[in-house]
Amino acid sequence: MQNTSLDVASLAKELVLFTSRPNTVQRACFYCRHFQENVFQSIRKIVSLPISKTDDEWFFSRVDFDLLTTQQADEFYQSDFLTEYKARHERGMISWMKVCSDVHDAFANDRIKSSDRVRALKAYFTYPTEKDSYMYFALAVWSFDRMVVPVYTEALQSYFGDSFASAWEMITSQTELTEEQQMRLDLADLKQKHGEAISREILAAFQNQYRYLGIYAPEEYGFTIEMMEKMYMELNIEKTREIKTHIEHAQETFKKLLSTITDEKIRVMIEQLNYNVYFRTIRSERWSFGFAQITLMYDRLILDLNFTRDEIGNLTNEEIVAYFENGMVPPKRTERPALFFENGVPMILNEQQAQELKKIFSSTETVTELKGSVAFKGIVIGKAKVITSVNDLEKVENGDILISQFTRPEYLSAMQRAVAFVTNDGGITCHAAIIARELKKPCIVGTKIATKIFHDGDLVEVNADTGIVKLIEKAT
Image (cartoon, rainbow, N blue to C red; front, side):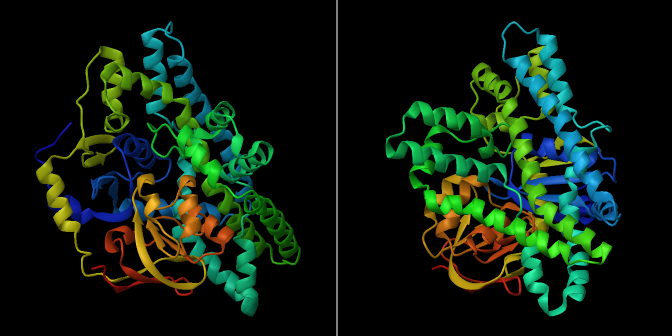
């Protein structure tokens, strides 16, 4: 659907940049539904604007976004909210897995009626409903990082005084294993048992168990057997097993810290901060597990339409439903279009509209310094390597500074080579922050536009004591 009469200039005045990250139409449709069909304030206008082959900038209506984050943040200030927080997580997992497994079952058997497939698809594409509060609430991690963390940080600085730095390290240390870390531990056990001579059959079974951790957009396949083989060969057993030791130590020190807290309000802040370090990652991993259940539907589209997986990712939900319901063949888009979502309805912007928006928002060319949130302290200087997809990971060499929209499990080998990480997205609870603390490397997150400002080869200073990323010398 297109609207040639859209007043782009007026629309732009209402918008504020939310983040920049890899995107597909399917991914945009999934997330934007959660922002617009919301038990909190709906973000009524959203623009997803391609800025590179893989990346989009997301712009939200400013007034709605401010109100949404305020409403979500207010819940955290309730003293008994952590119990409800965890309960929503558990309830949400049930409803999310049910809607995804129904799509899997509908496409796992050729004898399933077409009408049953369409019914399962429509349920998935219209998820969540109002009763599925977890999926609305899971987006509150952004509100937590944006609104709540600064308030809690100030309160904890006042409470701990000179010992704040050491207390903060204990509070924000990860005290529960993520599924990605468990995968690495299991892979270490596998390598200990089979060594370099592991059979492809055994590794394929492992890859099938954990492929979902490589899924970011709904249509993606996830970890391939080739990716798993590379991960297996590069894995260091001893260093990997240190993850568990690190977690166990963090659990012990966190419990000791809590036992010293006599102020109940401070205790609530500490428990919420610590849980969110785990929750932000596990919620993404559970979404990815759900996406893995619907791979069969996307595989069917690829087979029927002779589309690539990327081209399938550029279809809207309405186009997919129309194909399975009425046999209406969708358009083949080799490039990702700009999208405008208004009150839950997606619209594809034409080239003129997209270019006009890009011109309005392209005011960052002279920026040479950015500020973000410190995830792990330290100061380093190195050459920037900008990562926009897994295909870029090999260019990261020892001593480079990895700059990306955010990080994912498959980025780990590159993160081990890099001396610091800088991301557009995230807060103290994101994947990059967790890995930075694990590897003890300087990390600044939430810069919004680092991948747009810095380029491969730029000499960059990362001051993760102050949260400043600065261009020292542009690449020749």
